[in-house]
Length: 306
Image 1: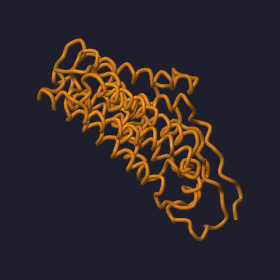
Image 2 (image 1 turned 180 degrees about the horizontal axis):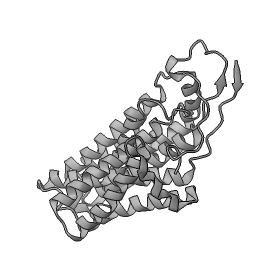
Image 3 (image 1 turned 90 degrees about the vertical axis):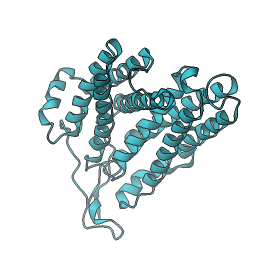
Image 4 (image 1 turned 60 degrees about the vertical axis):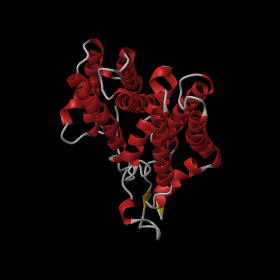
């Protein structure tokens, strides 16, 4: 018997989505641009275009700035570092605090040690964002086991989209950078489709219904993943096999725009459409998994809100 119906969470809104999109995309972009440099020249970090090193921390900073709009009390952010041993939100804050100034310093004073520290903190930022949502037990759509992997793959996918969109032609010429982008998109769409059908109980599947609708899937999967795969494949068939000039450059630019749009659709749908608190039921439905037993709606706390 259902005593209280599931209710949509009101803690996370568009400012939170902006932070998740910009944070994951900028971190993925920073790491992938370094990987492309290694593939092209064999030298990480130092060979990156200088403005590449500044773009990622700037976008990450804008994402954190958006959270001050949602929180309404930016001065309270100082309390986020008090629970590093238990709070993934504290860890996200710490990795962001490290990544932004270190990446900016590497822009001013290029050095392999600064690049390596920025790269590690960028990876930590993406991992932390995924585990923030995974640990919110009151929301079944977020508490699924695949959520951390979904955030990680989405960060690399949108990062590849930004790379294809803004990278100069001489950096993305050749098949290897395009193949890196194709790999990131393919992994992300595979994780997304698996996540939508993950066997995690009645409450989870009810929350997923809105994300499984054909119109939503047409945009998130079709525009955000399948279209870029076709466009990047087309760029490989053009003379020069890459994003240098002509049709290849147009194809990779359109692919970058599509990937970023798909990433926004994915994370906004997850946060704004599927974010339902568990209802309170008497007993357990016959097809409900034991791990999805009902829980009281979580209150706003430092662990679950900015």
